[in-house]
Figure 1 (cartoon, rainbow, N blue to C red):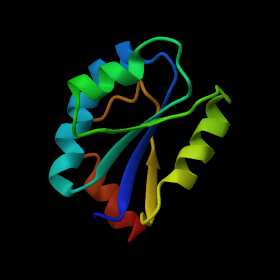
Figure 2 (cartoon, one colour; figure 1 turned 60 degrees about the horizontal axis):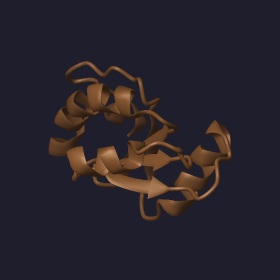
Figure 3 (tube, rainbow, N blue to C red; figure 1 turned 90 degrees about the vertical axis):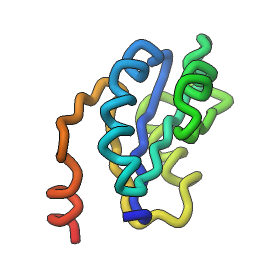
Figure 4 (cartoon, rainbow, N blue to C red; figure 1 turned 90 degrees about the horizontal axis):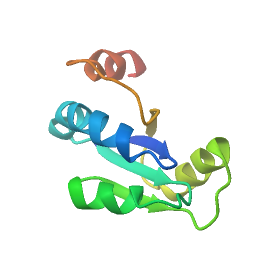
Length: 107
């Protein structure tokens, strides 16, 4: 499943990310899925906080805020070598075992 990346667009989202990244990482890291947060030029220190607290998460930083859709599209273009992108909101609450059935259905 190394061909899958979990992409989380973010704008001033540290409160959500600090709560929701741990269970997501617990589910996806053992499966070899890369987790990426794409920060949309947040004026706060969200991106720095993510890098400090979750060194296993790759953080992409936009220089200018473009909004949700532009951030997602930009980040997907930056992620080369992945067959699938699992797009998750920064407040997505994942349940144990959520991903394997999804991966199986996608083939």
